Image (spheres, rainbow, N blue to C red):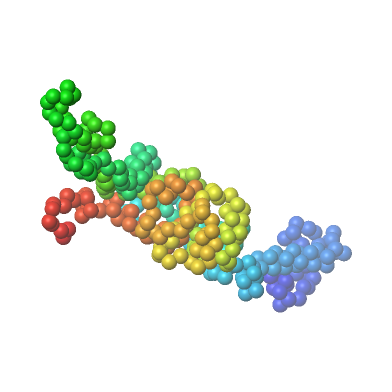
Length: 326
């Protein structure tokens, strides 16, 4: 009845006043003169409560353009399906942020696989990955010629007998100054070797877990920014208190135009495709920024290799000379 009174569908009579006052714990005989004000107070309080419940914030198109919120209703994501989730282990979670405004905005929660972003960090595996990446491209170009490779004549410096001096065959012998070097460096020498597949796999998982544990892993919806001004990226990093060096990772090797132009003149901000992500680059940069598409690809690949049945992939098998990988 009170709802009908508030909506104007029912007139208030004296009987209605008595019933409402009795519900309020008041006596109609004692508060006859105040019944009208009491009823109006009840009606106003109910109407205000009803109006506050019905209010729904609506973002107009002009506000969306000004604030950079031209996207779907928030939150954009609250759950992701995780494959091969270990029994008894809960998924890790991280906020998904935006890059189209300098101020940080939370767009949703992202579930992360515990085997990729919540594993125990193996420091020795991280160190072996870093040493492998530093050595596999190193080449020692030092070269010392032997006595046969030196230019010049091979005649004897003096006769074998009759001079009182030691016997010598020619001046390119190792004991002579400027002579050939026996067993010297024979460059170019490559220090390339292939790190075992499991160490490369667990090195990536350990580094991603370390970045997530240190709050240096940032997940964004896209890498699109509204301008190509480098000052925008510097202000964004400073406002959000990220590390000085930032690595942006996307699912393709074609970076967004504005982000590529904005970071081109900043030496400590780099962009990398998802297939190039490595341990050394994650160690070199303080903050790792992953797009949601890149996160899906990284997690899909790593989880697949962590749970497959083949312990020796084709890249880890011994390939004999003259044979091919089937």
